[in-house]
Length: 291
Ligand code: FAD
Image 1 (cartoon, rainbow, N blue to C red):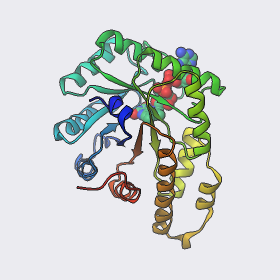
Image 2: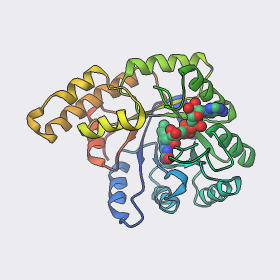
Image 3: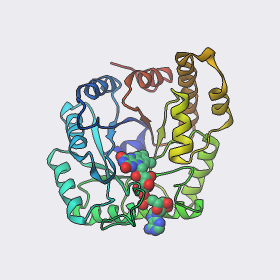
Image 4: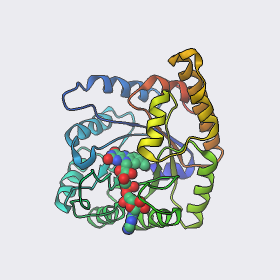
């Protein structure tokens, strides 16, 4: 069964990891993966550096996940800066190592660039291209931002583009982090009304560190910090990072329950390459137990 087929039957649980820098050893990430496998995830996705800066390392990680036989690897892929031929080379490599699930992205446009410096301007074009070239050889995921992509002026515009990506051939949607579940509910309702019918896999960012949450929301993704999270961040916890982490894990567990009550297709945890907190969260809310 493919991942979206599973999502139509039951909620999936999955994780995102990122490759270490080229000059750093792979072993710590392999240890993290071994810990994550104990939760029997439906898949593990691996991020891809903008413009393919870490393509080699990325492929090594996807292959290691595939070779483990423990779960399905999903390769993130950004088309920015790539020609059709570059994309085909990368896709052939994926197929060669047995990776047939792709999160098809445009990628962020680096400062100072004009356009995407590649053959495609938007992820929808990449998705159409993959379908034309490879038929159903790949299961294709697309990205979606519940608080809208920062480049979009309006929600209506952004949601129309999600519909275009689905209609170009995407099989399921993976979301950006969103701490405001009330907002998420309205977005889910609106995308459904706009005809986006594919399963939605919700990105969960564990609340573990005050500064990184503030940075991720306000400097990187344009996401809001709802009042209960703002309150959590404002408390002092006797200046103890460990106490904040405990409170953050409890907060994340409550958020997981809220998402589960919406009948979503899956929960996708951004692990930040740290296994222990993810094990605590998944066990804490009873969605997975280490074997
Ligand atoms: P698009 O879908 O192309 O959208 C980008 C903007 O263009 C949006 O505002 C959209 O509304 C608009 N748009 C889309 N289609 C059209 C159209 N036809 N006409 C006009 N406007 C249009 N980045 C990485 O570099 N590496 C990663 O591994 C990575 N992983 C991610 C994982 C997830 C789950 C998510 C949600 C994001 C990830 N990103 C990653 C970030 C992503 O690359 C950025 O959000 C990027 O800015 C946009 O990519 P996209 O695929 O959403 O682009």
